[in-house]
Image (cartoon, rainbow, N blue to C red; front, side, top):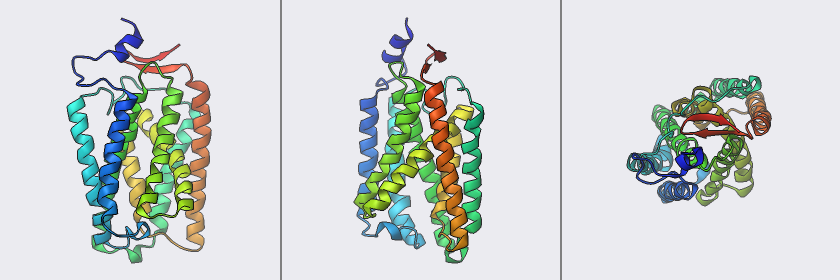
Length: 270
């Protein structure tokens, strides 16, 4: 049996074969549930984390709904490689740099945050939202969507790029929650770069849970009230370095992974 046949033909474990159209369907279901639950709160996007009650209503409850959609699909579909790669992919030297900067970014976010504005109930809601968003968005983008893109011998370079851009422009949905269009576009570009880094967190060990932890910690640090003045400048500088390093890493992978595919037998180079 050829590698392409083994990728496209259903296995004994699948209920439905991995494919991009199926992943699109899951993505739409997740967006409908999350946006539907968050938009009915009547709370402006910029006020989501002003209080614990706001955060629970606009983020925690919608994320719980989204997680349920993903859990039902994963359990029902029984796709392989959603949470673990069949083989660890190579990590070229520079690819470690965005991971290190991302970790530094989390520490800096937490160090310069305005903790005086963080009540106990808000902190609990932030912790819950971070855990939920780490599980939900990684399961969707670096799990289900990434698995669907690894069909038909698609080069891993394109799998990385498409899944990262898909994650980035998913944030266009924030317009539906009342976020300003200009801010959303900027968020989409930054999130696309973050998608590259989160892809690398999965790649470094071949385990989705690594990306879940990194994603959850980053969002927790971002949800805490931001600083002003000099501290805000330092925070922004680290974010810029993360984005720039992600762009360099993406270029390296686009050059080196053009002939690499992930198949049922592991990583193959054509």
